[in-house]
Every structure is written in C-alpha cells, then in structure tokens.
Length: 229
Image (cartoon, rainbow, N blue to C red; front, side):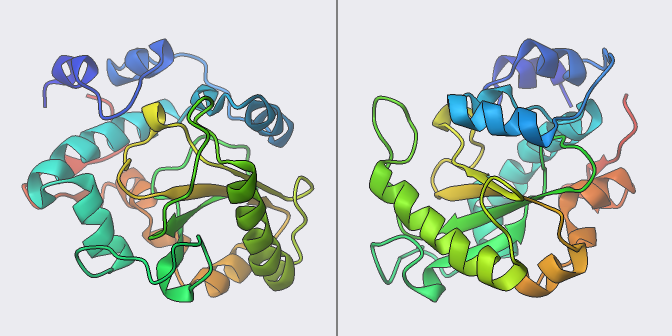
C-alpha cells in the first residue's frame, strides 16, 4: 500500500498530525476529554478531533481497500452495516420521524476519547439540512436531532444532553461517507451492555476492535492490524 499516494489523495481532510501518523512517525498522543470535546463542538471545529495514530492508519488503509472491494465506502456501509435496500430512499423527509429511516450503530472508527466515552453514529436516510455558510445543522435540524436524542437516550438510558450526552454533525471536509447523512453521538456514565441492548449491536464487532486484534481482512486480501509498518 502506497502511503504517500494516500496522503496526496486522502479520503478526507488530514491534519499535519494525521500525516505524521500515517508515515509511522509516532509521537506523544493524548485522547480528548469530555470538556475538550464540548468546547470543540461549541466552536464548530470538529476537524480538531483526532484518532489514535494506529487507528487512523488502519482506518485510511481500510477506506482505500474497501473502496476497491465494494465500489465505494457508501456501498459497504449500506450493504454490510445498515443492510438497507439500494437505492436508499426515505419514507419521510423529516429526519428521524420514521423508524425505517434511521439506524444507530457503534462508530467503527471512533475518535480518540478518554476511557468511558462511547462513540455512536446515527445514520439517516432523510437529508439533514445544514447552513451553507457554516456547514452545521440548521436550527430546525438541531431541534429535530435533539428531540430524537432526548427520546432515545434520555428515555432509554437516562442520559441528559451536555452532562453525559453530546452530539455533532461533522463538516463535509472531514466526512468519509459524504453521500449519507449521519450524526455522531457521544455518551458517558452509562453501561456498555445497556447501549448494546438499545442499539442491538456488540461493540466487540466494530472494525476498530477487529483491526486491533489483527482480525480485520478485506475481500482483496489486505490484513489490517495495529502494527505499524
């Protein structure tokens, strides 16, 4: 795999720290705290969120290979993760209004957060309107998202926004699946098994975990592990 070629033509915008990580130039790395993430979200600067160097390298290698094996990352997500029919079509244009139009999964390649912070993704067949000037959800979109979060995680897990629930929509430059809208959800102070029961998926089956165990292999034969080479 040509790392320099990936750096020149990345699947999403890379920071200088990302580039050093891909080249195997590891340095002291610190995970993001809850308060830090709150401040990043409030400033609308989610591009500052980083993955651990090994996870970032695994992620980008996987993105490059899965595009070849499935045609696109979107097709992999649709077919293997969401199991939605093709073409993807929403029953309701209003995000999260129809239960057939959304699905919550563990983030397969989460950012590096402190222990105890869990990272989920809410996938939506319906388009989530964003402000063209900021790239962030409109006020109406935010209202719909937060109402859904309160129902789902407030009622199901007793979570309260800001205290133990955060959310954001990543700006387009940092998205690897731009064609399908999704919201990032962060939880803390809840039991992992409760989250697993709520969403119907075990965290141990995420691609990040499998890659760290050296168990992730793409269809065209690239074995991805946490070892840097």
